[in-house]
Image (cartoon, rainbow, N blue to C red; front, side, top):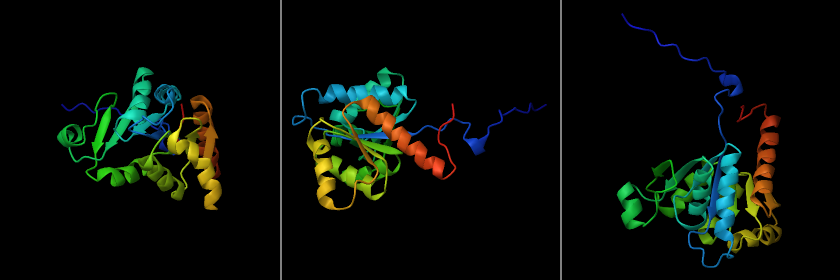
Length: 207
């Protein structure tokens, strides 16, 4: 006799399955040019993201993204990394990238530029911390896609050039918000996302 399994009813119309927003932390893999407290601030950012019940997305790399992942895991969060490599072996041996502090690593096989595109487009918001050219690439992709973007001011590198870059580019400020502390930045991004979703009658999080 087969026993019929009972599946709990879910209200998909209201997203009662608690769909979580995904926040990407984009930043320098090599942090020699960043301020002395940049890694500490990245770790705090990861912690704040986790405490807000969000999923952290990273490029599965070193530096700023790595330390944000460390902070998120310390706070009990979930971390997903998108690798430029096509396999775990290539990720570790060829690209020399870490695996720790991540729950899932997706091996894209699209090198860094392709990985950047997938990473930003699979995230609900992108946060820029310090950064170099790769971070600038992720920022411009997110900006062109009209993605909510947060900039952690005072974190050095690309992050501290974005405000001036936008002013001189004559394209407006887009959906970019600025703050000097992680808590304020994450809260402002959530307000932006939820106010935008409200206009379209949808909501991504119900707890």
